[in-house]
Length: 155
Image 1 (cartoon, rainbow, N blue to C red):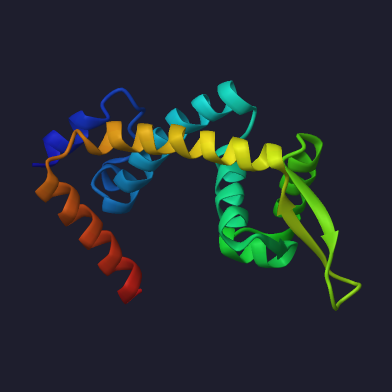
Image 2: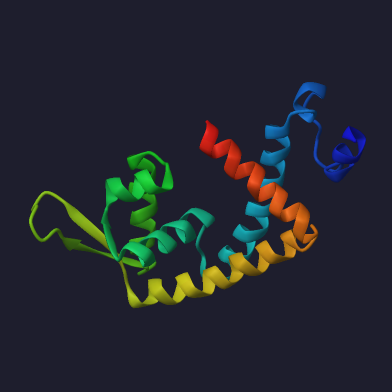
């Protein structure tokens, strides 16, 4: 079984036998490849990163958020999100508005261009996600999702 797994990423430089047998290492390889496919398309179409697309998705759902809340939802450091938001401001994807009750807090919201890029970016992500998941039968995809949810809930 392991030989089949190793063949799945034979073109990558193998790290060590221990890592090559690690489920988490293999999950990382799969995610990195998926992320690279998505990022290549997002950069080409909209000059945005996968992290920016995730932020657009969160801001689309929540309408407007303080920077720290966005950082928490993305599970990133505030300083990292500040740089990303600055880059999104330069691309006219988001704007900053004052908080209605707290003058110290500024809220981030999507611009009309941000909404358009978000929708187009979601199409790119879901298309590539479908291409990847179509390599699995429905049962295997359901098992993978169930196993990942179980890992997250129990740890």
